[in-house]
Image (cartoon, rainbow, N blue to C red; front, side, top):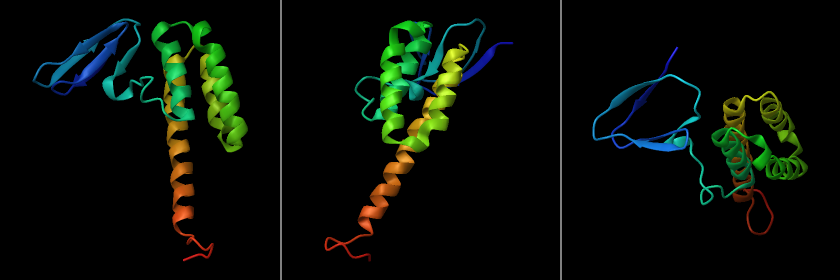
Length: 141
């Protein structure tokens, strides 16, 4: 069964090691085969990997695109170990990423890494909200 991808005008799609850029019209593609596929919005670059969870996502993305976990595995292991040490409550998500990598389900690992980014953002938002509710003299508003 082919994967159906609908692209907006100008949207980019990574298929294997190729970037496909859509023209000025909405387009529907049917893709058969087993190449890694990522939409532009799901592609992380080294410039946008500016938080610990995003760096984990980038490492998993490199595994997915290359189809080889060996190159990025040690970087991923270090990043995920440090993340769990700093945020122990993230262990279930990191365990899921690990399991997906171990079973070769790299796309699912990438999706779990997206959940880790969302979890990290929720923690940062919560911490920011707590800071803003405390005045400069330490009293709650």
